[in-house]
Amino acid sequence: MSDSIHIADDVVSSIAGLAVTEVDGVSKLTGDITRDIIAKLGKNNLSNGIKIEKEDELLIVNVSVEVKFGYNIMDVSREIQEKVRQTILTMTGLECKTVNVRVSGIDFS
Image 1 (cartoon, one colour):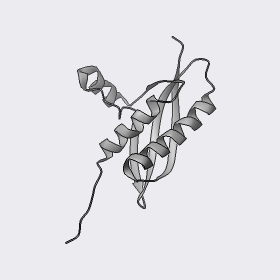
Image 2 (cartoon, one colour; image 1 turned 90 degrees about the vertical axis):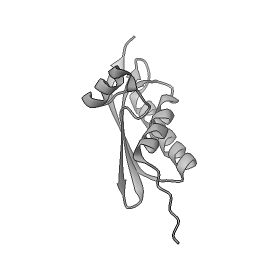
Image 3 (cartoon, helix red, strand yellow; image 1 turned 135 degrees about the vertical axis):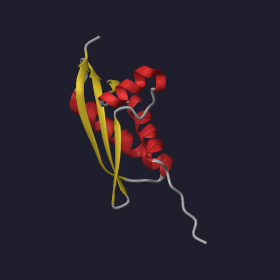
Image 4 (cartoon, one colour; image 1 turned 135 degrees about the horizontal axis):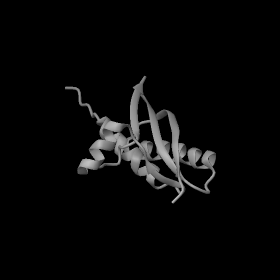
């Protein structure tokens, strides 16, 4: 008998989303239009703006965020990368090959 454990991509996306929201300077996660419509219908979740891919047992995490005005975009992006990488490893034991950050806007409010 062979035991196995599978962690759904949605779970990993939610973990990554939680990590991103803990980074100072992040205004919000931003997703594609489909996820935005879902969020407006009341099914908002932490995986909005997160896309998970797998390559050779390693994760490729794509994050899309809006950064608060006055924060250094490069510093916030690097902190997102480190926080996502560490949180996923700590909570799941899975390693990230890459954490790509896309800054889709600036929050001037």
